[in-house]
Length: 399
Ligand code: SF4
Ligand code: SF4
Image (tube, rainbow, N blue to C red; front, side, top):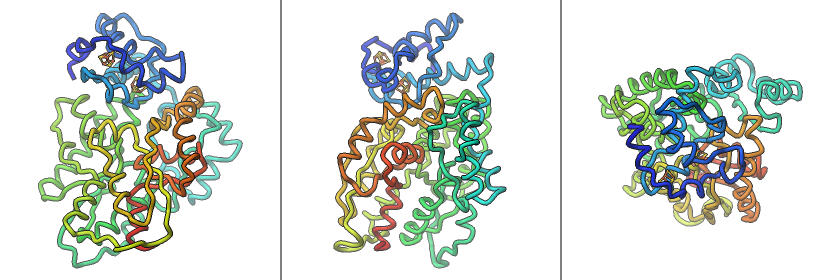
């Protein structure tokens, strides 16, 4: 990223301001144009930082809408990382940035105990004291994580092709069933699925909370594993739009000195679409399973990738279901943002339009690829929310 050139591309049209959900929800936030390119000029002169920097949720709607291609959210995140050098991030931000550490700790206990430990009133008060909203529904720990589940799985021996899965924190630690559903579909399409426990968090929660040096350590570890697979001719897939955006766009922008390994990463839904189109994955003919109404939410980070909506396209392949596109903007959660005490109400206000749209649709289930969008949508609507891959698996299996 060339900060001076990127800043100078801004023509002050304010399109980003109109599209910024946080600027619409609160007057505490200066807005993308002022906080991004305009403030950057002052930062370049070491003129201090505006207090509202922490209010940018990194949802990327400014970047998506900017006609000049100004990377506003990255300008904000790099300013936050710079600020963190002199103002240490809070303990709360450390906790939210290190979900992987908490999962490892939680794995020391039975999952029901860990979940009760996180959700009981006393813990809620403690979490609230450190700045995590007592109203937020934090993600629940499953009985087994993805690697514990996949190790027990006997994949068919006759599979001739291999792909690797970068699971990201959400599949690894919170919704391993979605990863297992992908493995099941890929096995059926003739692919053995491999992965490695050594894969680290992609770094998105780290850099958004100011831990940019640690982000780079994770990137180096992940790149080394991915490069190993690439040398063996094994494609690496991801099911998480935020991880995909991190590898394909953020890492090259934040760490231009590193090899752009992320450009080889493949979107799992696009990969499944290609399996369907090539005939490798056969879909059941005619109607299967209960006829369902499914409403799809496109995560902001998927829209920022600019690859369309492969998850929605995948759902449309299921003739058993009626598929709606919610097209109702950001859900508000933006990773760890909506869990923060001072941001909780803002996040809920941002998500209100989406929640209303989902409620009005009378859909049986909500589909979205992003794990934290799933948590926020279930929190705001009480509806079940699943990864499109899991819904496709249920359709193919006739569940
Ligand atoms: S990333 Fe989202 S919250 Fe931050 S300035 Fe851009 S649109 Fe606003
Ligand atoms: S949309 Fe882009 S060019 Fe317009 S004000 Fe925002 S950053 Fe500047």
